[in-house]
Length: 303
Image 1 (cartoon, rainbow, N blue to C red):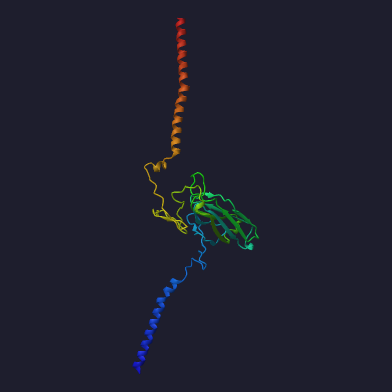
Image 2: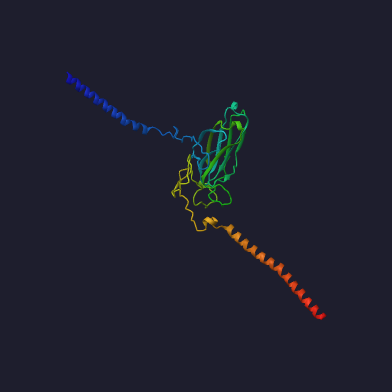
């Protein structure tokens, strides 16, 4: 009897151990099959819930991805998105202000757009700035860029393919309202495609894609590596070639047209000085010689 009881106990323990092992082995599979938290049930990308505080820490927005952030009144918020030639991008921002009971006056919010060279781009449509009274709950802002050009002169300032930055800030807020919790919703819509790119046949060697490190800070010891950089849209752009340094780079920071004009102006100034000295000093000496000659002639006549 005791032998039978012991055998039954052994079988039960073996069965429990096997079931536990199957459960533990199946757990990772269930987690792997679970949907990623970065995608919603409809298949669209989940909204970005963070914002940078500078150009270097701007949060990246993928195509079709929005941003829903809760921040503090008075902060400068930055997002980055990619734009290609032929597109016309429109940025729409909705600012949900704190409760009217907590505010002490009207607030003015402004949205600005910058290209990869951090040049401020003009808006062709939409209210770029808005002022809300104390009893107003939301402010709607928008900015439509000019059509992204495939190529442009460096001095023109036209929008070019690459990374663009969205900067949102409160330009006029009562001092006592700084720090209040505010909600922001950012949406970037693009229209057009590469078939509409102007001018035809022109293209950049590489898009204007500066390095973006959301949430990070650069250290003096951290040197950039010459690797390929990824754009917010997923395209890969080769890193810029390292700048060649010369023996005079530290002294003159490289030669350019301004040095040529400066040296030419110095030579002209020296020649003008020599010419002026020649015109003003020699005639005076000539007059002294004439006076001495006249004096000698007079003395001889007297004698």
